[in-house]
Length: 374
Image (cartoon, rainbow, N blue to C red; front, side, top):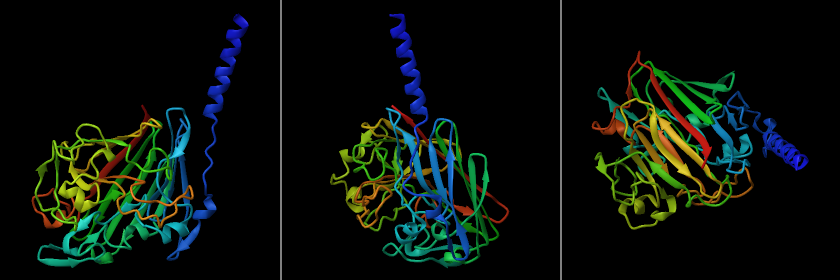
């Protein structure tokens, strides 16, 4: 009996050791991300923590390429939609995993005014400017510095680039902690007054990218209110309304697919969820914003941010024309976004929290994505 117990203990130790030594095989190499775009070299960066979680990044668009995190059985999968090479990132949707700026989300009529001066931007979403246009910061090659388990991406954006005023300097620092947190710290300065709204536009599928839709993911959002839209143009009306008890309410956990096709007007306008939620938190405080749980894998993701809003987008416009890292097309609702942000069209809505940054000021913003299992 003693020998049997000893044998079982040895097998357990070996099993745990093998689990710890599980190797992650990525479907791409560093060479797939080495290129030259607009005279600047692109690279792949890899962060790994003590529990084996792995995050890969590229300085093309300061993008997250992969997030490998374990399921409830300890098996790792890449939970981030994305592509296998720099060429794919150039040919497919620019926003995947990217830092979006100078102004994420929509600006109505692609214009805003500061101190009597009018600024015009690319029109790429109906009559609006979406994510600063088709060729904004997510198509730029950023400078970089590696430090421990962090990568600092930095970019200088000239006065008038994409229509935005001021010589702008931006940093986005990615840090992977041993608590399975991917922390993103943003910093921006400008020498002319300008509106800014930075986010990361990662699409997640906690079952694993390319592994079906996200309708079973159970989402909670720490928000009683939202900024409603009045048409498929998806421009907020300027109101802030209570959404408790409606099809938009995620104050208690709901599967994404439970109500996504209901006849609520906003769900019809967005062809699903694509809305800004007003987080229940103090201004500039790093606090809980949202979470997502995938029952089959047991993976659980929590989002904390200093930003006042978060956009739930359920991949309603993924058309299957992009082929992801697993070799499968990204079709409608195969990924979801939880984009921390200021509110869409804030420059044209004075009752929204201000997005105006003045010379001599520094914009600082933090978002954390934490991964675990339940």
